[in-house]
Length: 133
Image (cartoon, rainbow, N blue to C red; front, side, top):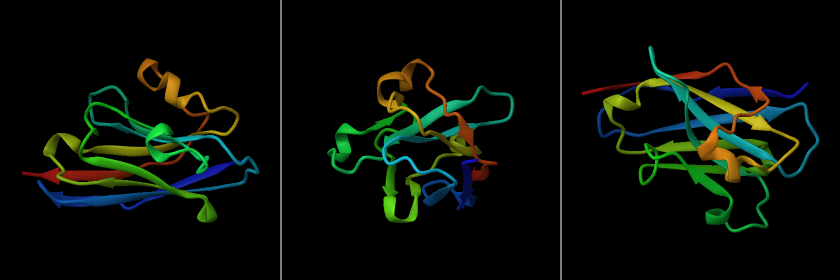
């Protein structure tokens, strides 16, 4: 059974940075989708970014971002460590949320379907990010 474990959340002042980490285990696939979502209290879950873990493809061609993340957040991977990251810079109070890692180990549809509701089949427990003004 695949498992995803997030870490790296915390409390920062607006303008600061955090790097979230998601470690995946319990699978054998080589190329698949992983992504980050967030949910703030009283709000719907929102897609932040996604990546296809095939590093033979140029990074720009295998990553996608939600509007709130564009220009401030960067998703990346380390296949040797079965890990993806979310570097978050210039954080704003509205970025405060629980951040979740998700994975779909059977397809690479996240790029095509990200804006129309792609969601992973496996989820982590989440890591809290709090940004104060």
